[in-house]
Amino acid sequence: MPKVEDALLYAQEGMFIFPVHSCIHIPGGHIEGWGDTKPLTTCDCGDPDCLDIGKHPVVSHKLATCEYEQIHLWWGGRARYNIGVKSRKSYLVVLDVDPRSGGWESLARLQKDLGINFLGHRMYETGGGGVHIQFSAFTISIGVATIPGYPGLDVKGNVSDNYVILPPSNHKSGGKYKWINRVPPQDIPDALLDLISKKGVTPFGERTEVSQSKLKVPIMKLEGMEGMKDFGSYLKGKHPVHGATGGGNLIVYKADNFWICKRCGSKGRLLEMAAILAGLCECSDFVPGKQNPLKGQMFTKAIAACIILGVTKDEMVAYLGKEAPND
Image (tube, rainbow, N blue to C red; front, side, top):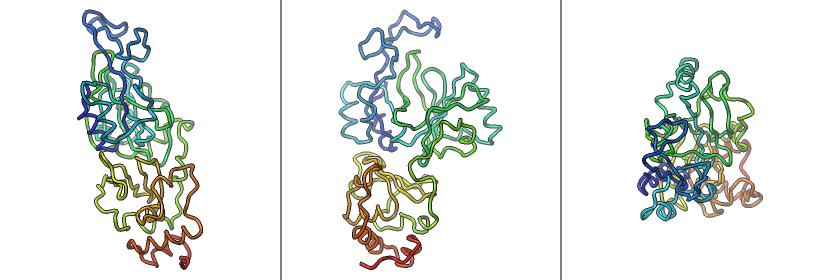
């Protein structure tokens, strides 16, 4: 059963997690469809007619967090809840392999067709005998999607209500979720995206098309952004202003030169981060849906902050694509 240490380790990885009801196994019975060797199972929610045993949230999945204090409250003491991860907040997409529907054969064929070694990706065995392969998806939003021509393979995307169960949670079959390859999630391969049903893939915010000028000055050039850990396509670490009580809550995505704060749900580029570092704005001011405060004099102050924090005036001109305004 999951312990608080298991939950805290996910927080250190920047995963937004929440407690999920676990399974209580009753020896001497069996579950229809799982064979006589599997124990009779009930859900610890207390409902004898529960239809989602060991898989439904104890609290709203919208409360998912990577903050240590809340995680201690949920999993501390004698609590032995399963662990769920909120896909959207954690920017996760999962390839679900169901062996009962031919998933192993389809996965082997998919690897050969796409030239991708999925065994090198972040992967774990589900309690029911399947496999989840996790990918990062920072710039696209993916719903629940199928992969045409590959039975037994489905995609669990990062839209608002999606979540998946994590190891070492237990399952109604009597099995447990177990890690196969616990490495940082890599970007979802483009070749795999091309195969996913197009209805399941939509742009994520405004980050799919980037003006080339916005790539000319890396966010990491700003003083105060030191200490981020490099994961290849992105960097992750503690937020330089409000910090983190657990794990890395700030991600800087290299290819598109933008950042995401997992605590606040905010996003931005060079100017927004400079404004936060200089104390002109709060990180939460840049949550999508809010009016961007960098207008008029505040925009000019953000440019000045960039220069104070290590960006040269020539670099600022290249980033803006025009002459920087005078204060």
